[in-house]
Length: 258
Ligand code: NDP
Ligand code: 8X3
Image (cartoon, rainbow, N blue to C red; front, side, top):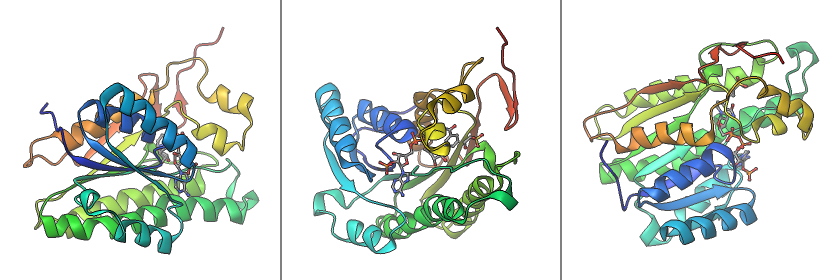
């Protein structure tokens, strides 16, 4: 794999989990990073950590991707030195609950759709025109195995990840006459804050999701994202589906019983 130092990489949802691991992976490769999330203190801690380890230059943006005006403004007023984004990792996302559809909550559905689908669209619209103008750029969307298959209670979350898959494939067509590349990295179970967020802070329930087998680590997914970005310019890694060895489908996970 080639190394890609000195690229400017934008990561959404960089305050935790997969986004944070991507920040670390690209920092280790010598990239400079635009990190965004709602929790700015977290971003500041991560920036300090990677500055110390790798000397990484960062530009931090406190941003809720659900707010189209804030997204447009944030990228319109980037300092000149940060305008040349080479790689965008559309990672910000979440799930809420595992309710059957007829028992689900409207606010949960809206939060998932607004973040996972509309947020990804807003950020893409803000960033891709510059890439087209510069004739250079890699877009890596973080999808999910939930964009390939469904599971009980996954209804709206699975729909958002199927939407990410559709957007990714369609965007690849939109950009086929440009040098830009459109990739999706679709993980199975990754141990992050994802389940804590899904179960609204119920740590016991969240921990059980990862019991009895070895889930993916965020760094496993970050390696796949980096692979997409570091491929030679004529190589477009369209899709990587990455699962724990003990997972065969969203609902089939081989767990050891004690
Ligand atoms: P985490 O909860 O650890 O991280 C989610 C990140 O998204 C946080 O940095 C959070 O930042 C950010 N985020 C959430 N909502 C918003 C928002 N409205 N605006 C801006 N940022 C937001 O979970 P993961 O790392 O696991 O999730 C990252 C992505 O990976 C998601 O798209 C998820 O769907 C996907 N995924 C996760 C899998 C898993 O098993 N963990 C498997 C497959 C896909 P903050 O709260 O500071 O804003
Ligand atoms: C996150 C993984 O299986 O909880 O996308 O949907 S799963």
